Length: 368
Image (cartoon, rainbow, N blue to C red; front, side):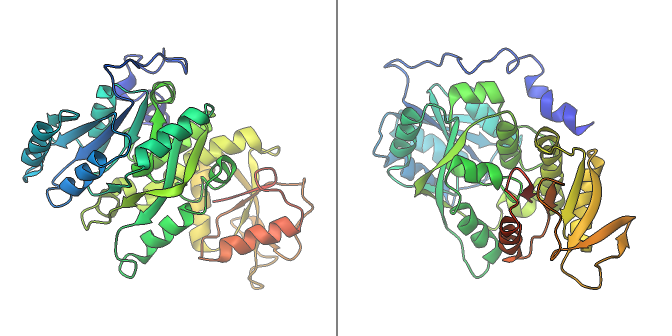
């Protein structure tokens, strides 16, 4: 099935749940309902789920409910969750057959009763101030639809250097503008730090099952529809890094899936923001860059030329496109540049070089 069909008319929304929703959607908010709902899908997490649940029970904001969705666990996770629920009436357990993280997340979201909904995984830990800080942020920033936070990396930095570097990078992005401009590099907000308005969730839609990283797809879809996404400056979540984490083992989180997701939404962003649409200039002419740019071409974008620093490529033609020198960039306002340079440190050099040549990020170029 075509990607667009999955994204804009997914099976779980075919009955019109999202179509009729507006951002003025009224959410229950009386004394009988909690101030915030935390949704946590759980699958075979007996070793970590107690710590995750305890971190919610230790929140300074005590007016919460925790909706834990036992996604057909075959270990002791279900029994542990039932035990927690007997100890604390604010904990609600939903036992389902194995349906996957997307469906189990949406099952929990559909049961949430509060005006604010936090997302969490069963191997993560929330800082005691997390719910209080994020609820207060959304109350004082009424234009914001989704707020994340800085995140502590809970794994081994030597064994998982790539994941640790990703966390460090996301922690540099705090403002709405930084999040918007960097969205096509990687997901600028980490899923277990999400807190959304229930009204925004109804308006922009829940997680979609579309063969892509569901959290990143949600962020790109929301931003593409005009949602405001921001972040608190505090590190309010410790992101677990278990060996069986889905981002390590599921095809939905493969490099190919990430680039497919980026290309789909980047093409639509370019259509709205590139004055020379559908024509772009690609910064980088290596094989990997060309493979990534080919996904943009599949979405209807045309490549005018490549920019590269390799003197052996300058003046050559690659698939019929001329390779320009990075030292002789055209005047800003004459083309739109998409940079696919990804080597660590090189992206900042590209940004600096384009800025020094009076290119403005978001107007004349975008980093991917």
